[in-house]
Length: 235
Image (cartoon, rainbow, N blue to C red; front, side, top):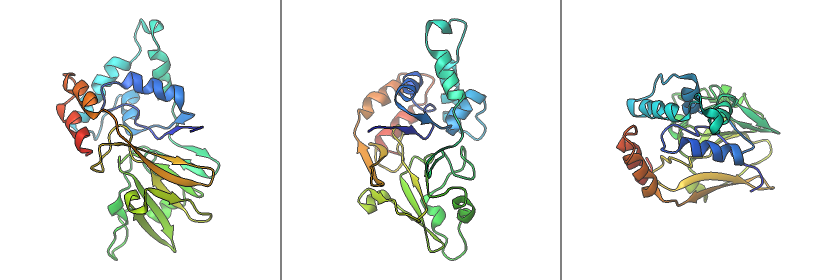
C-alpha cells in the first residue's frame, strides 16, 4: 500500500482515541471530517444517542489540550482533528464521510435505492451530479457500491460481487469502504478497501482481537458496555 486515505470518524466510540489519531496522522495522506470528529472538536453531540454522546464526552476529556500539553502531543492531535476538511478530491476521485450533498451527516443506505416504483428515498440524481466519476464514503459502517446505470441507481453488497468492483470509464459510482473500527454488516472483521493501478477495488476483511478491544471498553466506566458487545456481532 503506497497511500492511505481516511474517511473520518477517527474517534467516537472506542477506548483509544489518542492512539487512533496518532496512527492516522502518521500513516494517512489525509483524513476528512466524520460526524464524531466534528462532535468532538465543535463540542456538539446534537442527534447522538446517549451512549455515543457520553463517548464523545470521554474522548474530549482525554484528548483536549490542557496547560501541560507541551509535555505530550495532544495539541498537535487536536489541531489535526480540527483542521480536517469536509471533502477531498484526488484526480477524479471524491472523498466524503456521509454523502456528496452532506459530507458529514447524511447516511446513504442500500435500501435507499429500493424504490418499488415510487421514487428513490434519496435525491441520487443531484447527489451524483456533485462528483465527476467516483465518490468514496463511509458513515454507515456498511460496505456498499451504488452505481449509476442508464439513469437508474443500483446498489450492490460487496460479498455478492466477490468483494470486488471494477471502476469503469464513464460509469459513476459511490463506494462505501465499510468500517475498520466498528463494522455493522454482521461481520466483526475490520473492513477497508484497496485500489490497484487498474482501478480494481477490493474489499478486505481483517480479523483482529475483538475481545481485547471490548475488554478495554468494559473496563472504562465512561463507555457503555454495549459499545463493546456490538463489536463481536458486527452491528
